[in-house]
Amino acid sequence: MITAQQSAQDRAGCLGMAIWLSLLPHAELPEPDRYRGNDNAPDIAYRPTEVTEAAELSPGDLVLAPATMGRERGLDTNRLFAFHSIREAVRRDESAVRLVESVSAQSIKVYEHLHIPLGGWASCDPERFGQPADFAPETTRYSVPAQTRRIARIGCLDEFLPRLQAHPDYAAWVAAYAECEREQDAAQAETRRIHEANQAALAPLKVAADRLTEITAEELVRVRMGYGAEPSVEAVNTWLGENGRLRTYVSGLVRVKGLSVSESLEIEHLLTALGYPA
Image (cartoon, rainbow, N blue to C red; front, side, top):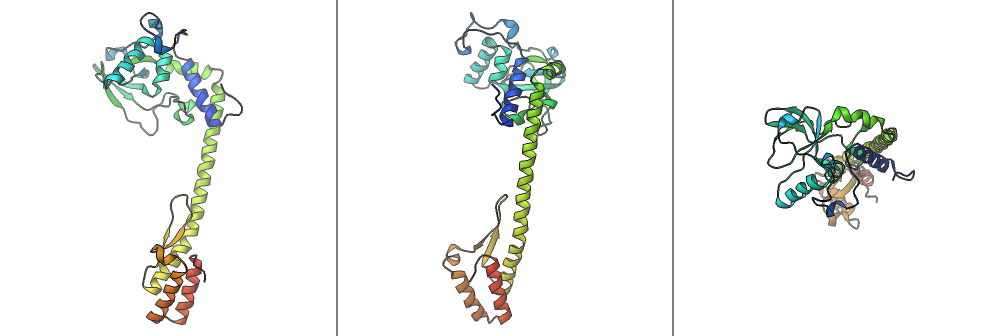
């Protein structure tokens, strides 16, 4: 159930999944799916029907292709095909939906990662429903029949799109998704702003640390900064950085190395700038 109190991400995720599932064949049955058998399974018209020849498919088809590797996984997939509606099967293994790119005599090429609702808002841009995901534009070849998975045709993507867009909640899904994108853009902009501010703060510290090394001919401090973190200055070892020891050590260096008064004063300024005040 969608409520006004939900975040845009929750709304987009829930709406996308609810709309997608509502388009799939389903028969309401009194028994939970875990108690079903041959006598109380959905009618065959509502169940996933396994494809046995590549010729049964066409480019642009959406298919459900769960893996069967391993005894338990194989049994789960067999039950999925035998005792569940297509809607229930997709809901239980939503990441197994594929888009057929091409068909040959004994195999198909599919996109394995699509803009398909998986529960999270970012899994599917409603305006790119069924299209390959940007991060995985390559295809994978499946033999038909496949040895490591079962394949069932869900329907043609071009037939789903008008029904999807005609759904009464589609506009709300598009709006929630757009709000998520705006929130994400704002968060990324803020992250960049913080990083740029930290970079600006880092530069003078590095200059000061390098100059201190140049004057003393020793590396005494190191400047560090992780992404999203403020720059920090650390003595080369913990002992030296505690209880004013760094300044005491530097004072000794000034005398031992015979540094000039101007160099000594510059060191004082550098240590203060680096967070080691007198």
